Image 1: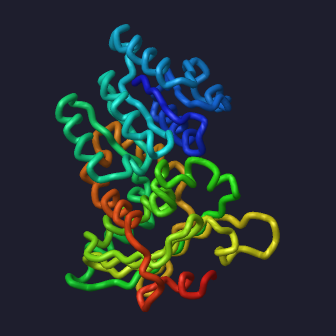
Image 2: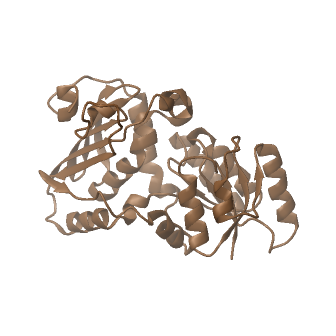
Image 3: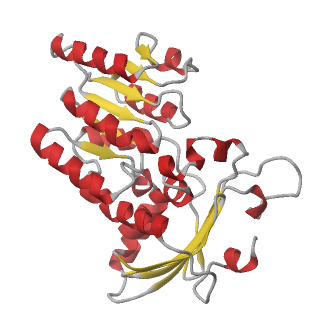
Length: 318
């Protein structure tokens, strides 16, 4: 049984990590978050120490490191806001702990270079959460593409609309310096999936870049992809004109055929932890292509709609 610490424990994604840690037979002994709505700890790790200040959290982890092998933290799960990931990874490395970090690991490619140097110096590793690679439908698609005729080029459309209320833009998620912007915050795992399946990026265009929606075009080795991301409920085909928020809309087509993957998400974090703890996780070089792409998308000047645009961008909405 390994001892874990976790940062960002009051956040949206933390329960998936707590579930994955305990389901794999390990325990959380320390947790960090500036917000104290952390009753979730009673469900998974009632004995865990909680700290709202990083300085006290860091001091406690160092105390545990000196208390012996049965007390020290071996792993840190990082669920904090994107801009804090780099600092929290470094904190983990200082106490000799490996890391499982939510995506994106960092916001800029050069941050990966610095972390790779620290891995070499400390012997610690940073792993990340690319759970879509473990989704049965996505894995089956990759297998089909890998086995298809060499040189074939696919036409792909990706639409992801996950409605959020006004709180989103008022939180750190709406601050591009902290989140990396919409394409980074909600799109990075899709970009990783696309590159993993269809190969390296040859060309990228950004057609639309707004606080609540963005869209563009990717030419990959094996595919041309029109993508559209949004947190605006009115963009969703499921929107009925009322005040209720429609559910998340995921729609992917490959050569006009829909890829069905609305289900299959339950337990993906638990399985990813199992793979990572067995040494089969996803590290810095796995995430590098998607980190480079989100950086380029964030810095790109939108060119406006054209013949390569997603139909939602052309129509203004669905």
